[in-house]
Image 1 (spheres, rainbow, N blue to C red):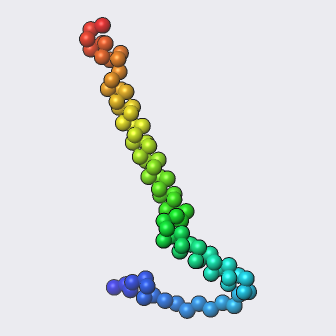
Image 2 (image 1 turned 60 degrees about the horizontal axis):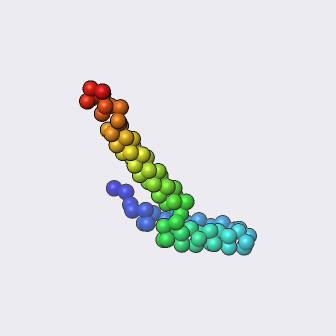
Image 3 (image 1 turned 120 degrees about the horizontal axis):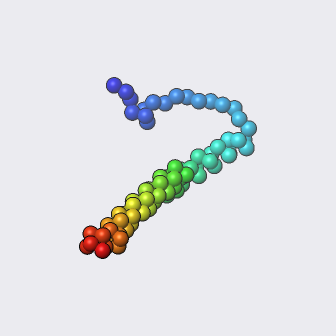
Length: 80
């Protein structure tokens, strides 16, 4: 049985310059703020893919409507 991810912890100690530590903290804070608001790059990409999929389905439905209402096919079925 595997442990849940929040129980698996490993110590990490690095000596880094203060400016790098500050940049890391700022980056992590910014990421979690965006994640909470739903605006990370991955979340935005998923939203764009969903919109593209919806647009593709709308286009397909439109093509089916056009094909089903083809005046040439209607005229030939009436014997014209």
